[in-house]
Length: 226
Image 1: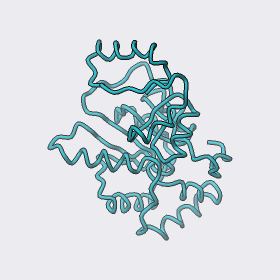
Image 2: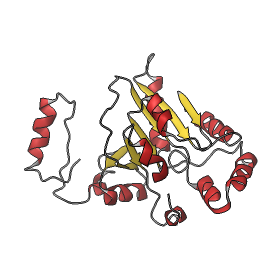
Image 3: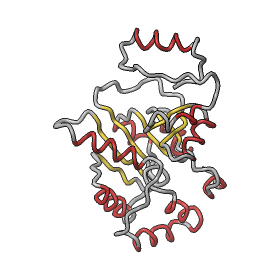
Image 4: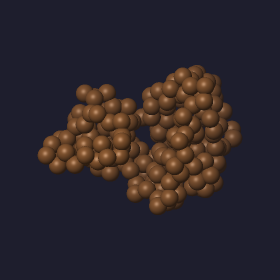
């Protein structure tokens, strides 16, 4: 999908052919907002450098992220490695709101009290479930999934219980409790990492391809510096 005109889009198809990519469909909007066409194309994941397009996609319930400039070196292994933050990405922003408004102690107390109550779905929940299903179709999956979150014990348990309820299998999970994410992501060799906070993405984007997941328009978290 591109804001290019159909005429300039011909160069895109020529490049697709040159590099042998298995892409046969395209949408060239001639400068119009691409997010208007996401539902029509049944898009599961929308990535763009356009903050306007990504914000509109998030507001309409599509998993979307604003891409950072990629690092110079990217791991080119054939297995696709995807990493997700937890709160406000895979899960809703409910718990993140409590942490931002009331602090760590209130957040931990809330998670302990609700440990057996599944976390509400966030913007990337459907995508994670789809990828987990695709994994289950292979004896040796070409996809590897990880959660890299600032949560730590005892807040980790609700995450694990929720994933069990969703019947989602995660290959790796890192409950970092404030430890910087960038070196973990580098060691994991992520091909893409999704997070909602710039404080994590500034460093992470220097070592792995990264995308920022914006909050929905009107979310209280938009008023909090991230």
